[in-house]
Amino acid sequence: MPSKPDIHDLFEKVARRYDLINDLQSLGLHRRWKQRVVEKLAFPAGGRILDLACGSGDLALQIQRRDPQTAVFGGDLSRTMLRIAARRQAADSIRWLNLDALRLPFRDQTFHAVTIGYGLRNFPDRPAALDEIRRILKPGGRLVILEFAHPPSRPMRILYSIFLRTFPPLFGWLLLGDRAAYDYILESLARYPTPIEISRLLEAHGFSEAVCDPLMGGAMTIHSAAVKA
Image 1 (cartoon, helix red, strand yellow):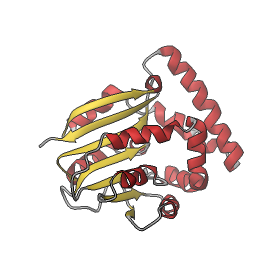
Image 2 (cartoon, one colour):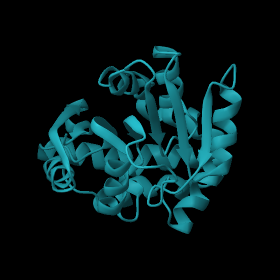
Image 3 (cartoon, one colour):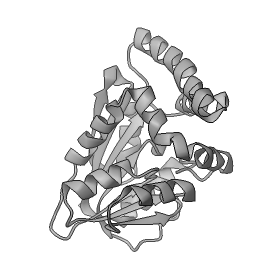
Image 4 (cartoon, helix red, strand yellow):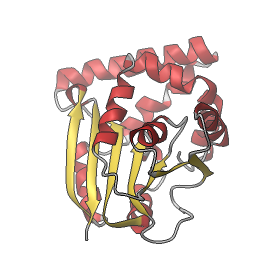
C-alpha cells in the first residue's frame, strides 16, 4: 500500500468491502489475472516470495495454494487489510507484515520473487520502491506486477474513462456510502506512466527481461522482469 496518509486512510476505510468491489468492477476477472501473475513465478525448493501491497491477501493466498512449501510473506501498510487477509487463511502459513514499500525490513537478496497487485500505481516514490525491491531480490529473482494501464487505442481509452468515472464510484456509494472513495482510481491512473514507460523504469532500476502483457485491450497489464544476475 502507498505511504501517503490520505491514500492510507482511504484503504483503511474500504478494506471491509474491498474484495466485493473488486469482484463487481472486474466481473470477477481480477482473480484470473492474479492466477496469471502466479503462473509467471518460479517456485524453487525452499523459495521465499513476498506479495507487496498485499491488501486482503488474494495473491499471497494463491501463491501459497500453488506451492505450500514456499515461504510466503504478505506486506501492506494498512493494518485493517492485513487483519482481513489473516482471517482468510486456514492456517498460519503466511506471514503478514505491516510495512512500507519504501523501507522494506529485509536483508539484501532475501526473496526469490516479489509480486505487486494494484500497488505500484499508488507508491509515492516508484523509483525508490523499485530500488528496495531489487535490493531484497536474489540475482535472477523475479518481480511481477498487475496494474491498471492506459489502453493504446483512443476509443478504448474513452470507454475506459467513462467506466472508471461511473462504476467504481457507484459501488463506493452503494457499499460504503461514499462515492468519492473510488474516485482515486481515475485520479491515480492519470498520473501513472504508460506500460512502455514502466518497462523502461524497471530496466533503469536494475531489472532485465522486462515484459508487458496487456489484458482487456490494454486496460490492465502484467509486467514481469528479473534482477540482473
